[in-house]
Image (tube, rainbow, N blue to C red; front, side, top):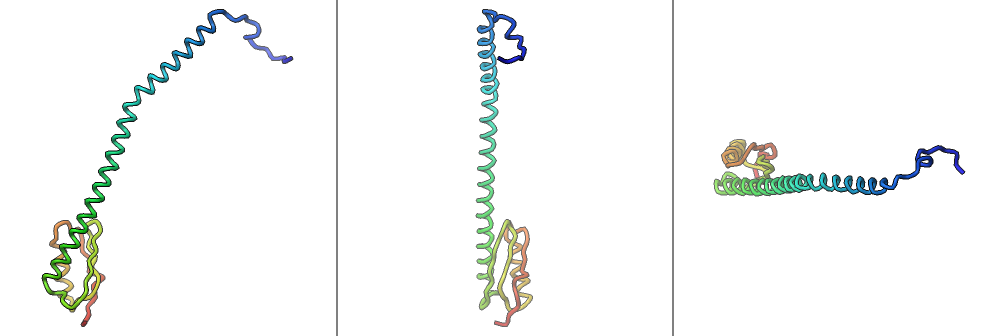
Length: 137
């Protein structure tokens, strides 16, 4: 037998306690559910906002890739149509509007010319021709 003292051992249970505790438990459960349900729209709205943000980010990334591809195509087309690179090889890469050219051209004037062509294309933020070398072919 334990020697600990408990108030519940000395006071006889009241007949209404069981009903009181059951009602209290139900009230607490109801309040918990009400708070949870009250927050449900906020949680749903948060999920919608998060999904919308993620979707917009994916759209923006896809748009940037398409813009970069368009920029690269425009620059390559202008270089080929211009004829300044005839007999030489120049590659064009674009990332987030930044254009990087590599290869070789006949002289510095040709390098400067393709640089100016690239700068005029809509959506170009910067142009680097540091990878283009002068070659006599």
